[in-house]
Length: 466
Image (cartoon, rainbow, N blue to C red):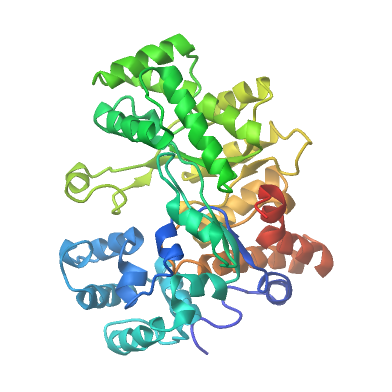
């Protein structure tokens, strides 16, 4: 039997039935990813496994560095085939790391490769996959069609012109591709060297001269309106923790003025300004019926030397450890007091906070929308088997798993869609094991209906993208 077989990760009869009858055939709604809309619009063809698999994958780079592979073969100037061979030598060392599962699941689903990847099998796998990548089935659009992507949402700065989204919207391509509004750069008043050029770009994009705080707010609202006209229905924020400090508009205006003059905000001023802006963004989303996403607890760019050398998103981020739940509760409460709390998904990167976050979501369910406040799927370091189980168990114990809107890829790679299959197998194994222990009824329509909803229906009904 090959390593990746029909019942991979499914340890009980009930799990196998749930997966094959209720989960396996469901389409995908990937409502948060970092795929390039340009690649989709231009239907990019990938010449080899390096381009589609290794080009920007910091998960693999971290493993390779841990295996003693020089940086030249991760982000450096080595040839694509040399980098692939370096990764192939590392793969056997990744046993019990989720990369081992993902690697072989992806090779199986995209290329029909059953061989375990190692230095000996790598040359033939390289040649076989290169041939298959030349076919239309494995172009950017071919992949989305192959994996039944009904819709996906990219991650876009308010200054982006969305030209590729415009092209996609005008095309006959079956998969709907929408932007998501991510204004993280707006909070960088403590880093005027980043904040000021971004404000200038926002001024150009909005055609508004941004001189004072009121201009900034007008420009952001105008871009929010534009994103809405392009089908956007989600926003996204990557934060260490929530911001919910009292801040008047006058205080925020003073902090803005000083940042524009090149004076970095203090930690207290940054927190106040970020709090003011996050309430503003919450109001915008609530007005238009959008869903807000909060990605919390990431400690970014921990290695200063390598950050200076390679920049962000190169594999030097980790799990953060800040107090979380009180600030999160204050933020949600402030919006709720104004009747301006939008649909909201909270993603947690530190498992210590799973139960506190899951419990907090219950405080702001208001009966208007099933699962209005979501405890989102395991994110980044937690989007693996154990992390998924932790998230599912925490949500099950203090909320309603049946209303969960399920998995996403959060990926820059067109090779990442089997992550949905991986999640579905973990979900079915969890529910199936409960059924076989007698902890859930032996009712497949009941349990299978919930599985099917979590795989697709709940996200479709919640997000209303089509």
